Image 1 (cartoon, helix red, strand yellow):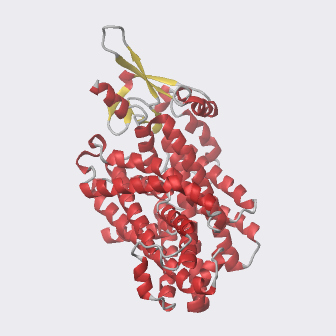
Image 2 (image 1 turned 120 degrees about the vertical axis):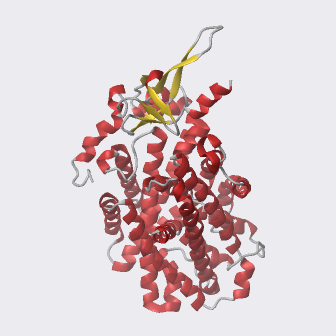
Image 3 (image 1 turned 30 degrees about the horizontal axis):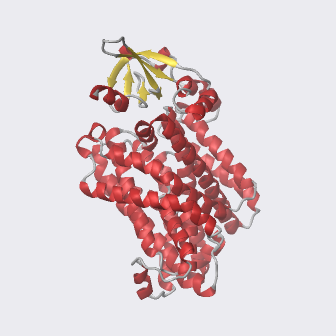
Length: 116
Length: 407
């Protein structure tokens, strides 16, 4: 019970960092698998606006709709470490994370001085 | 080198603390109740010191800013509600500060107000785009120091120092109790505006604070906000010594700057206007960044001025959109001073949801290790949470009952 609580407080809603230290979303939920009589196991991290729909009622659905409704599933094996943030083993793009920033970049990059 | 760093923090705190809300509420409180409400400023300043120190420490140790902490501790749903409330107040405050910058520019140049709103918005956008975080702090901090002219003015006006000293002792000597409490709530709200902790904690991460900077954090919070409080006293004393006897209601930034012009002449007016310009300009940038920080931290985007604008694109787009929205609001012709009053009162309602997670995390060893709150921080943090809760429950009723302080 205490370990489940730790995961709830220490992982869910925490920042995801990729292998380069890039901020690439949050742990919006966890996928947990188990059978009656066996120990439940966290199998994946769920991230993205599609997950918000189930977490905050009408407001969550509205936020998910504005955010585009995508959800990304990252296998738990891909977690490199959990400190104050949750670090992943590979680059964000390999998981399909950080796409919002990548799509917004061209809107900013044309302005002189945007890479300073 | 350390002293230089502390000095920077102090300058930043002066520029960030004394914003348009403090100018309006402190001057108006002095003009209405003389020195009677000075004690409330003391309470507000201690409150912002306690919580800024706490969230600076959280940033240094756990590398988390306020909206990381809000989401982790209250969850997605309550966090989203807090985010929306915080962003509405942030936008109102930003619009009020931008309007304040335009008013100062009009008083200095005599050019038309609406053109100067555009100048203010493009000027602020350019400063944020071109200048590094350190230099933004320096420019607005040093400029904001001109506000010290109000301290000189307060002395020159020869107030009744006995009455001033009495003002630091909580007391009630008016029949208009509701208005008195409306101003008390407004002064607390102006001193503890939530954007200050959003900006302060994110600034700690921008400056890459570590546990070695905890002393710097404490010095910044105590001396910086202490000096901000000192300026608030000066504004209220000027209000009590000059505006109250003459029946002047300082309803515009122009009339607030009269407080320095009457005792000190044209040079007093000029320094007051330059000081207000930089203080309000600094506060515009604080609120602008706070809005972008909050979105990015809550949704997990890349953020920070220590990244290039293209390195944190949604953060950059965030502050750009907020600046355009603020431009739209000010262009409607809404009075920035009135907008400020609403923003300060509504911000009081958002305060508990901001400050509770900070207190919880500052006590959590999983985040803070041996740097959890000591007894003093916890006692003060707990007391202030109760005060904030009481104030937030009474803010809107008091605003309605006093007709937004018009009596």
